[in-house]
Every structure is written in structure tokens, then in C-alpha cells.
Length: 279
Image (cartoon, rainbow, N blue to C red; front, top):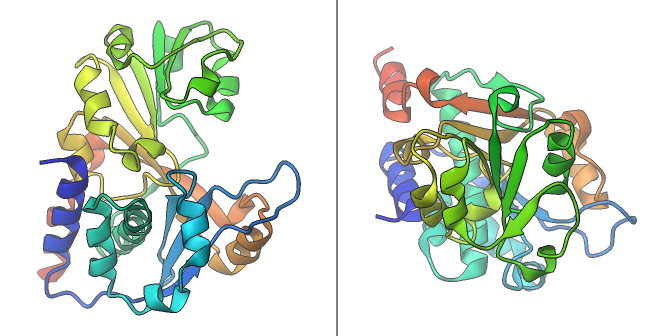
């Protein structure tokens, strides 16, 4: 079973016979933003304030998103939107991931799981102990952070525009190079282009593996089953402050906070939800 199928099946199963909050807001990135600001992410918000981000820079997703009718998306049941994540249609997949992330945040909250809130963007990777770091996806903020550490860095990237980038790293499309890495950072974009299963199959089983980014805010159970050690996502703490920032392409500031879920400290969503049903 693919990762996308596993994620959809899990959240559908644990949501069975539960009253789920409907989708109340769809954020579409602004077409024009100030220089240097970003417009990469869309967002789905549920009635209880749970939010899920999705990436829009794949397969013409942004232009299709701008052309769609938001009212149609808002009227679609949340599990129907999530089912689209396991489809071949890029827009349905993007919206499905956003809905999946939003409902995951809702389920973790009602399950009573306390998120380990952290400003650490590297998914608790132990860089001071690393010899060779692998990064899947060219993510400049993380590269700049790694520059202060005396470690070898290999970046796996499918987009040829990054192959000639200069720095203290090597860029390659060859995922088998990950076998040489003892610390591996994987960006959440792999959840959109269906490459995460392939990437994980190439990792050294002894490596510390972290999946990080706003779009990696889903239930972590299938990720842990595949060998991921830490999932670093983003949760919204002040939606009233976030929405105007999204509309103008401004940094999210203190309206969101990063968190990490570590495999060894996570009981599993079934355990969490079963415990509240017995109360």
C-alpha cells in the first residue's frame, strides 16, 4: 500500500462514526505579494480552528486553484476531500493533503496528545553527532542552518535548476546516495510528489530520519511504520492573526508554531482516541 493510501485509510478509519468539523475556509495564495514574500502554501481551516497547509507549486496547481469555486470546496465533506489525496489529479491531491493535515490536527487535539512545541526546524536531528547529512529537497533555510556545522551535505533534488547551485554541498537526483548518510532531513514536498516511499527505501536503516515542513502535519503513524523517526510539522495557534498574513504573503510570525512528534514518545492515534472514548 502506498503512503498516500495508508494515510487516507487511517484517517478515514479513525474518523468513523465521529462528528467531524466541516471546512469553513480555503486560503488561496495571493497572485501578487511583496518582493521576497512567499505564496507557496494554501490552507484549509475547519470549524474548530484546525488548519492544514498544502503546497501549490506543483503541476499548475496554483492556477487551477485560483480558477476553482471555493464554495464547492467548502461544501464538500472533509473525508471526501481527503480521499482526493490518493488520486492522480494534482489539485485534488493538494486539497486532499490540506484537508488531511487539518483533520489530523483536530484528531490529535481531541485525543489529548500534547505537541512538543519547538523552534527547531531540523526535526531534532543530532547534527553535532552527524558525519554525513542527507537532505531531500533543496530548502535554502535549512542549508543555511547546516552551514555552521562541519558535516558533509548531500542534497537529493529532481529539479535540474538546482544542480549548479554553489555551496558546501553536492546536489544529485540519485536517491541511492542516501545510503551513505547518518542523518536525513526530508521536506514535506515529498508528500505531494509521491516520492517519499522511494526515498525511505533508499535510506540507511541506522540513520536518523526526520520529515519536516508545514505540509508534514498529518497523523504520523504510517510514517513511523516506514522508518521515520521524527515528524516536524506546523500548527496554527492564532488563526485570527494568520489569515491576514496569508492574504498579503507576510511571514506567519507567532500565529503558527513548529512542533515535533518523536516515534518513541507517540502512542498512536488509535490508542489516543480509544482512551478518550473510555472516559
